[in-house]
Length: 167
Image (cartoon, rainbow, N blue to C red; front, side, top):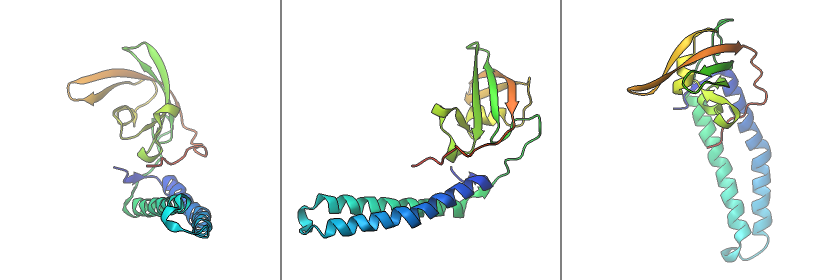
């Protein structure tokens, strides 16, 4: 599911791997050493907690490395006047008579609470490639759907505040 990534996604994943290897790993190893030095390991909760945290970090590193290895690189380039990856789109929902603003991102950076929707979600998929003023049909399930109108597209791609989701 998380196999379509942009070059920027790959870069952010590599940065997280580096941070986890150089900073988090050292801290976790030190925490295990300190807990082990406290003596009896059979009833040492701190030791088991430190080992669990260390293993969790190593698991995350392996997961991210596997994600990069199996990723398909996709382009985030789009036309000046069309919806593409990393574009912010203002959408009018006809049925609800409401306007919402979303940023279209890849699945690993989606966060609906912050207004970032996946390019693979029904709404994201429907909006991609359309232009301002287009009336687009969104079909979340077979036999069900709704119309939206694209009111505005912002092509600035400042994703310095975007983060990669933890799983």
